[in-house]
Image 1 (cartoon, one colour):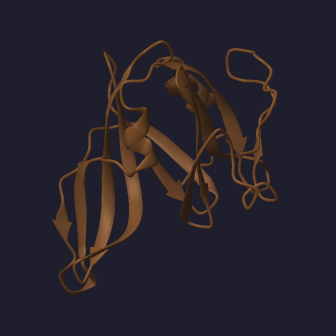
Image 2 (tube, rainbow, N blue to C red):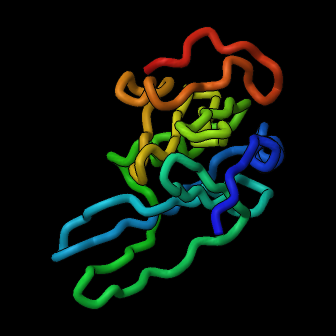
Length: 167
């Protein structure tokens, strides 16, 4: 059962990672007929704290502290391959950066629930959200295609005001 987050759980998980370096990212991809098909979920490895899993479900972003799982076979439906994120993955570009703050992205649901996060790293911002069971991952804010359906909170978790939330 999926329980939407009103922001309190995500805020607590992110707050424990402020000031910490993103040491690595693990991604799980669905492969079908030897082709990379879709990003399923990913894990952020910050120094000194448990690994954080990010999983999308419709318009909801689900975060929890859990280690990456192993790759697996889906018989005629393909494979789930789990491994380190590498460029050109946008997630890999933030490895080595320090998380300074974050803002919640409200999903397209009633009542409003967390649909994503705008991570504020010392090297720039990274927006990650779930929209229609698809990942939206962008540098510096949400792309214009997501703006009608999702909204970045105007105030970050630490209370700073955001000046721009569009990519």
